[in-house]
Picture (cartoon, rainbow, N blue to C red):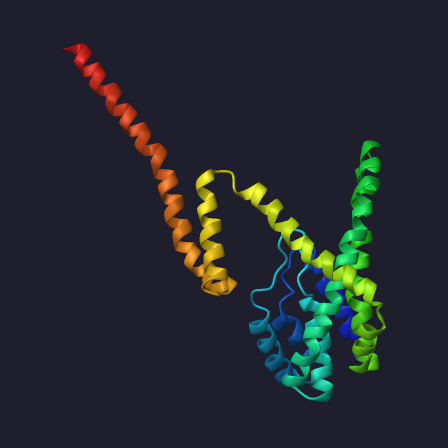
Length: 260
């Protein structure tokens, strides 16, 4: 009981960090603290390292909600330590993260209704109330991670399967459709903000080719793109300087001809 409460509180703290600095949200750190709470640090490090490698390329892009690695790691590590080790942890972490992903979609859709409330408060000039309204999504984010984590650990692995099977098919289908559409919207918004020049579309085409046709993951694509982006940045910075130098040279030549 106490361990389940402590792990749930730790998952809630990581949830608050996830909407802030995002320092605590990685599986290796989450699993290590769960291991300290459960009294088996060595097993938790094995589980955390495995989940870290498995979820290394997962992240939120725009409005897209990725599988919840916080709930998946906390629940998978706790149940893995108590009932079987790394294999059990991985087997439980994946469906748990997918189930929690649906809760995150509902959470992020719900908190948008706070925006008009914050706008009305801001019009009064009382910005202290605008600041305090941020505690509402923080509290909801804490509960979205902490409550399912506590229930899953307290009632065991069977509670996860029961929860998934109890959801109506219409709800699961609707959430699946929303989860499939939201990534496209998020990526589209990012491209509108980032791709301001026509030549930058070539980077999008190159990344698409590496991901689809060469089947590369995010990390190798990033490592390939890094030197290319560095060279492009140097070229962009040097081009105006070269133009200015040519202009200065032309001006100097004109002055010399005028002096003659």
